[in-house]
Image 1 (cartoon, rainbow, N blue to C red):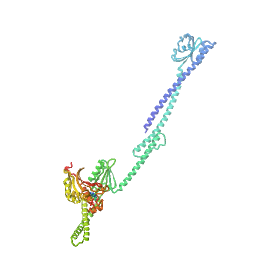
Image 2: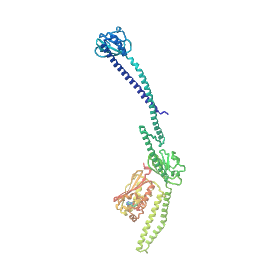
Image 3: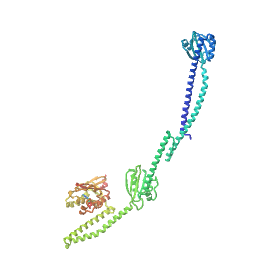
Image 4: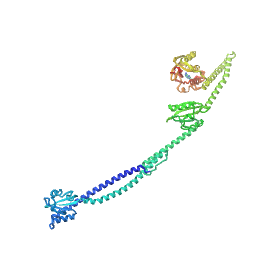
Length: 575
Ligand code: ADP
């Protein structure tokens, strides 16, 4: 294949060489002609002056002889005229038959005392002549030289110039062809390199040894290719590391693009599914679990992290799904097998429930017998004191077992709530009525601040009463010093937020995040002394969660605390 650049370079070279040869030929030719003409003129002038001198000095020969001899010696036509312009002698014609020459330009100058020069066609011969005239005493002399002579001398020069130019042209064309071929080949190597790189071969190099501009371009391209190859290798290594890491994970990981097509899945995921997911196939072909699909779809579409629980991906197993958006679009989902954790959680709950249940009867028995003994007249004061301690502790243990049973039931979902539409005000009123009396014993004023009479929520009345009971009792136990406990409700996003506010000592902020953990107590001694089990807030939290709500506490030291929980609004008035 003749490269196009070769053809283009050749055309340019040919044009340049051609134009140069022609210009050179014309210039040389012109200069040559001019020089020759000047030389002839100079010669002719000298010969004319010599002729004039001889006409003046030679007294031995006749004018006609002198004219004939000088004309022959000069190879030109010699003429002598008198001051009136009459021809006295001529080397080539009969002087008498010649017309008057007075007004010929060269003679006009000669008569003015100068050497006159003129070039024109001869009247007699019709070819261009160069005339040079010089003054002599008693007239003027003239030499005429036919300029056609120049043309004759010039022809061999033109021929020589033509052949010279032609050989220079051929030589230049050969050199240009070689140069074009050399440049064309080097550029072709760069093109081949670029094609290989575009085809994904990053090992391609031009390896040019030259340091000219093309060599510099080649070196820069080689350097770029080397850098790209290195970065690509680094990316591949980190990708392999990432793959190894993801494959060695216990969790299953799968990535999809924006259209829900599988982009990648780790070994855990492939093991989990009956049919290993095919690359670029829709995810739904390999996974059918609706919750899982919805989570990953939402994460990809809305660019948010979504969580879900999935039970149908593998039979008898539960997975916690976390789907997160990927920076370039699409999403990645991590599936954590919760089966074992849930099984252990369940056996832990069962154990607690069984222990609590088993403790119930002996505790009731201990309480019964202690009370009987306390009522008996036999006991003296010392024994009574001990019996009272036994009774108090048995009662505490009984509360603890009851609270543990309640917590396990709510936590495990065993506790069934009958969720109905109920008025916000009713719930607050229930709580107020139940604790009005107790409030008085603590010397605390219990009041409703804001009851949102028109609002309704979806709730199990009994369960909500339990929450209020735990919160209000806490307020009495720990914040009676504030003398006032306020119940209230306010509108919240999706529902109603209830609150129980006291004006007691408050809770310092580091305790707030852990307050709802089971057995978490700010002041252990105070809690025990007041008969607390450390489970009240944990129970409240699980009841609220089971209702789809949230619970939190706000507090300022020495100014009191407020416990908030939200319940979903009943659909009929949620608009
Ligand atoms: P307890 O049975 O100990 O009351 P809870 O779970 O009901 O257990 O409460 C956890 C802890 O939170 C309590 O031990 C107490 O230290 C703190 N607390 C709860 N309510 C209040 C309140 N209104 N003011 C100050 N501290 C409180």
